Length: 354
Image (tube, rainbow, N blue to C red; front, top):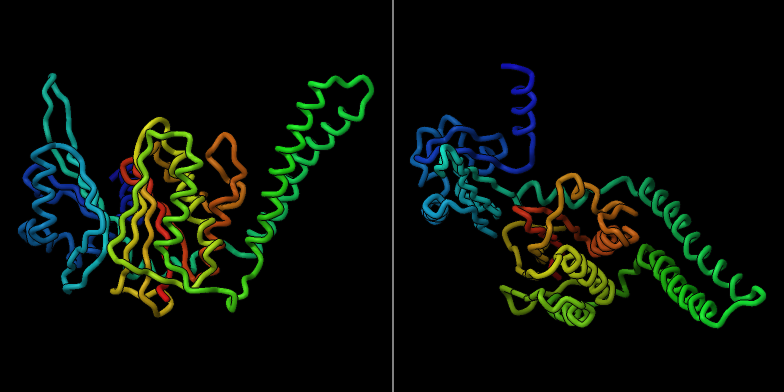
């Protein structure tokens, strides 16, 4: 085996998603360690099994439909039954691979990706945050730098207004600069308020659905693009957590507005909530809130940096919204993660039920 193949295999074996590659007859050609761990069978055991018994009849039927249609599909919130009859909540991405040869389209392989949403990996992610002291130092240094920019704009505009022979239209323009930069400065200063330690005694019982519906109304009113559909789906009537409702709305508004920003002309955003009783977050059932958009997607390298302060993929933006959102959710003993599957971006908020 040459060095390229060695590094390729190492990469495939160490990614977080489960991967299976089968030929058109569903004979297994490759499976990585994560997929073997999720399914509960070794590569040799799977090769001796009927493929229907590997995933169960429901998932098997979906794979067959994808092969027949030769088009990819995402199965969301599927419960995979492993060797030991444990239910594991996963997204499954089925991607038939098409080759074009001699002007003929031929189906050769099907790639199956398993994205583990819960289980053992989910529980330890709650504490997988960057070193607090380092991040706060970086944040305050960045804020000090950012504050200098609007202050310079305000100072420059004021100097023009106070200069001799200033024209009326120049005064109007400078006034607009002072107003917009003051607003920008105010938003930056408010950042400190969101990062202050919260008094848990001030937390209240918050209905998640109410907070989401309020946030959706605000985002719909603010949006200038009416070709984007925004819908809310819930699988249970009442989901309550102990939190600060206004801070919670800041998070939902931030995530929904990010979804709007990722869609260029038209598309859809889905906000979905559900309760998970199988696994525990801080010894409680946990609530899952997903914000899904079909916009331009996010690269894997960007996803790793999304929650770092002052990192942004937007042309205009301060790069602190997602960082603050993560810190707010951490206050309520939860966390946020992001994944991009076939250009669908999914931000998932995990919060313990009250």
